[in-house]
Amino acid sequence: MGTIQKGILGGFSGKVGTVVGANWRGKDVMRSLPKKSQRVATEQQMIVRTKFKLITQFLTPISMILKAHFGQSSGEKSRRNLAVSYHIREAITGTYPDFTIDFPKVVITKGELPGLQEPEVTPEAGGNLAIVWEDNSEQGLAKPGDLLLAVVYNPEKNLYEDRQSALRSALAYDMAVPANWVGDAVHLWLSFTSADGKTRSTSFYAGTFTIL
Image (cartoon, rainbow, N blue to C red; front, side, top):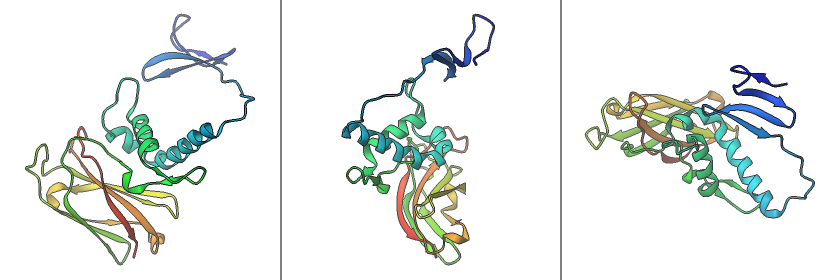
């Protein structure tokens, strides 16, 4: 059953007959109900569907980061949609049906802010990743108060951890991960965001590390 939002001449939400009403990006829209296809999908269609499923499952846990920091929205394409499109196009390796994520090509944030200069990461006992970098606070749009964003992914457990606290001027940060990650190999991405969150650097793939 549909619900009228703003009187009889306004938009509506929900199902009415063969259409569905919704509000998308501030606009009242109406879509036809999808029909079940009786056709057998071609191999190319299966390739597209498999890639889309792989990427959406990989990116969904960090949707909030993508929505805030993956470039700029373009027309009706949201930042998250831009991120999905990029990763389907650039960050998949292997052949159908055995596709996998190409981790070095994954981009978590995208922008014009200068990133980390000469970053180094060292796993330390106790489940820490020791991250250091050089000072580039005067480079371009960079400021000492920019915030480090560290995102780590554990494929064994299919879990993410992210931290945003250290200042660019700190030049070091110890990232602690869950104790039950010890022995697991993880992937790490690093970037900076401005203090107000309006600008960000393009993320840097720091590599894969075994948690000690």
